[in-house]
Image 1 (cartoon, rainbow, N blue to C red):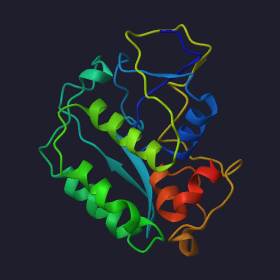
Image 2: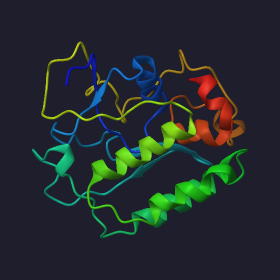
Image 3: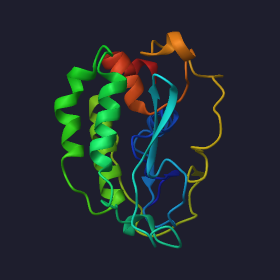
Length: 201
């Protein structure tokens, strides 16, 4: 299946990832055959806490980090990460304008046990696109490919600071403490802007 763009699969992806998907419409594929890359948005998200940016990390089973295809990476439940992530989302966004509008459905992702990271990422992203009223199919590659005009698999970095250039500020719950933080997880935009999030993108 040909497509002009290849994207990685992320957990609660950053705003620019969703914006880039929107730009390509239906003309993209998501990659499950690449090797899992540590310290990326594939298993982490960045949200706004009272103390600034906070990383939520989905732990993976040891041995899944080296030369394991993304589609084969298993989630570890040695720690109660789902409870921790949900409590963090609640504490950071309970006072936002739209958290209560989305929480009843979103909490389900933190009550269901997923064996594979990619399944969690795809289901969450599909739900987020639905909330944003973006009809974008998450079609997967059938094998690892380099045959795409635009390759986004190595573009997004969870470790590098993001310039706020190109990101129009919107209200954030704790912006009186840290100022506007650009390109956080799409849930930050969704909880703070609700239906207006699509226009922001």
